[in-house]
Length: 439
Image 1 (cartoon, rainbow, N blue to C red):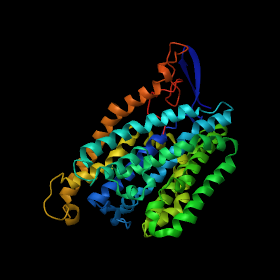
Image 2: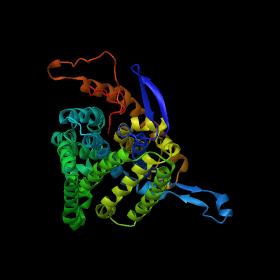
Image 3: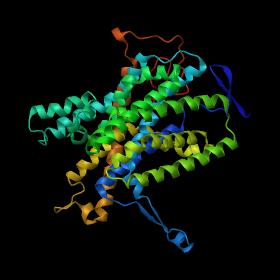
Image 4: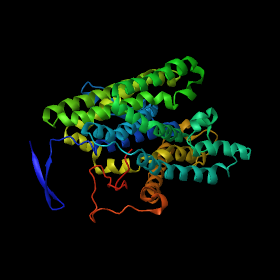
């Protein structure tokens, strides 16, 4: 067993390099970034129509396929929203799984809600209010004051998914329905997490039953309205259940397994298999019309594939894990929430505002103007990254720090010692964030 020595607070500390950490799982940064940017690719493709077709002539001379066609990734990229929701449940349940297996107190529900509010609300509210006040209202998107309030109030209360006209026709920001699903799930999560700790099997089956009854008994029989029903909270209970179950299994495995070449090789095989299965599912989804029917029928299986990819990435060789956890991936993960909030709105508005300029009645993507397609894509991507970076560092992090430091009645808890101790998962004992807040 390879060990290294370190010193913290004047005491020798031995780090076991073969141990599988369960507090901060570095590959989750890359997984989150990859999921967000595949969804981004899908939304950009809807506007630019750039076909991801890579020609490799020398392969053709070797008798192999001379091109790589990734069009299915762009067209089916919306499926990666399910990976984001799986990762959310996985990360949220990790501390509960650790507490259950280490026989320590479960996390406080009050602190959970406080952290979720700090993580989600500041950037979300800022984007909603800015878009509503500076773009939607001045552009005449609403015929009456009531129309505007009908759009704004459900969006601010994370209930827009419950209003069919807003779910697919909001004048504010169409992608925010995902944040609404997350916030709705957060209301139930502490209760579900405690139930999962006490009765994991029954809770898991119960969550699957909710999803199956909703999708099979309600959404699928009404195919005409499935665009409105497939992305409601009950439809994702199977995805959330798998996130929580595999978090529990990961922590359990970490207590009994050690990193080894054999485990890493097996995990690498699982990772490759997972991506192969994912590609097959994405291609298969595009053969069904409407695609929401395929989603309703295969959402559970898709979440199992995302689980295979996630856990395999966390258990494989360090060099492969680095692909998910390098500095670029950490940065992209850090800004990923604000990237998700802003990317589609920017893409749609730039095209509507003719940035870069185009003339005529047909948009350039429909006329095959390749130069415009690539210039537009570069401008939208750079603008998204710039706004997301500014929103993360100038709004999200400062706001989260203030919210997490706030105590009822203005009271502050004084540290027992003067030395700031940072836990492995980037959290201080007082609950304040020192790194990216946990999803």
